[in-house]
Picture 1 (tube, one colour):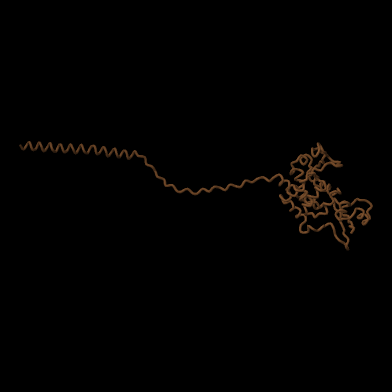
Picture 2 (cartoon, one colour):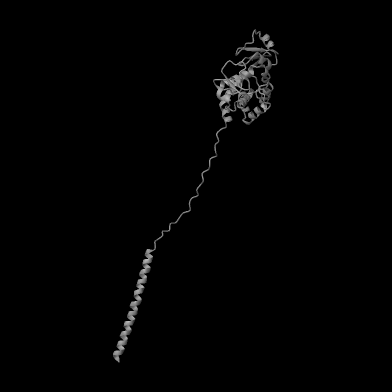
Amino acid sequence: MASNKIEIKFKHIALVTALVVFSCGPKKGIVTKKRQQKEKVETVEVVKTEKPEEVKTPEIEAEVKPPSSTAVYIATYADIAKEEMRRYKIPASITLAQGILESASGKGRLAVKANNHFGIKCHGWTGAKIYHDDDRSQECFRKYKEAKSSYEDHSKFLTGRGRYADLFKLKQDDYKGWARGLKKAGYATDRKYPDKLISLIERYKLYEYDEEVLGSKKDEIKIVRVNSGTKIHIVEKGDTLYSLSKRYNTTVDAIKSTNRLSSNSLAIGQELKIPN
């Protein structure tokens, strides 16, 4: 009886021991598996990102357009036109506007091939010539070595022909009067010629060149002085007895008689008494 109890107790201990061993084994395996899974998980480093600075878009520079051919023309020939105004009393604004119009801002065939900026035809010209279609086919035009010569010849053309004499009675800043006077005198056949000149002068402010030449004394005729009530004209390049007679509202014979001139020739710097 006692031995049976001992045997039962022994079996009970053995069973408990087996259960403990069984339960411990799997637990250890599970722990190991979980540990291995944790080790296999890749560590992701979390990088703290800062708010990016505001990127400023650089200002787009305004597109710089090249100057127009007319603006380039004016910049090139304005000084020449002003010099011609000082010498011949033709408004620089008129000279420039005519040059722009007649030469297509320096790009016309006559300007490119012959330096002829004013469309002046031969009319007894003894220099080089070029033929060009105008009012008629292959008309004769003057050809110059340089554009400056064309400007000077333009001044001589206006001062040396009687039909333009009335222009020189106008004030030198009266560009509208000059524009209309040129058409009236027959310089151009286009009935809109005066309007075109005036439009160019006002669009490009060419009258400012007249003001530069005239300065604060634009109404003063610098080449005239008065001695004891007698007007004295000092001859400049381009002056003729005819142009002077028109300017001072007198006659060629009266000027010759007053100054005891035997011919129509004048010398630069010569002093002439102007008849009253």
